Image 1: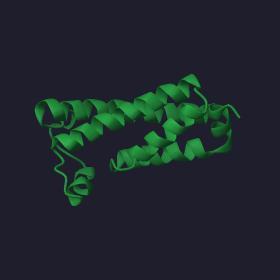
Image 2 (image 1 turned 45 degrees about the vertical axis):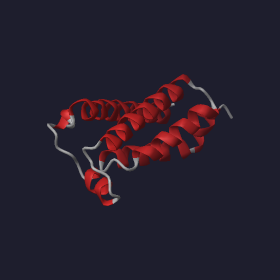
Image 3 (image 1 turned 60 degrees about the vertical axis):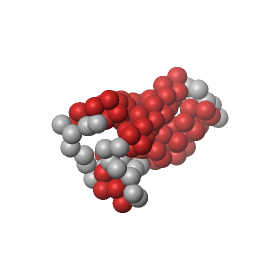
Image 4 (image 1 turned 120 degrees about the vertical axis):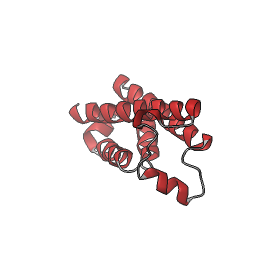
Length: 124
């Protein structure tokens, strides 16, 4: 039960952060929560040819945030296999957001892979 709670907290906090930051970037052209500063993830995004301040990356922030929040709700509500798959998907999506999202995504994936939470969430 505790590990399920950890997954919910990680997914909800990262989802909220990414949704707000992405919305700010789309509306203002700047990541408002950090005063426009970007983290190491911007170098990763730029290395694949995307503009970290562009609308595609802003939409990626919003989309990842929505998926993470939906996963947090599904895991908390105990939606069975759907919750587990949403959690794994959201945890995987978080890995690109260096360094905090990478840590939160990896921790979420580890928690969801443990036998106890996996069986509890999936209803096995």
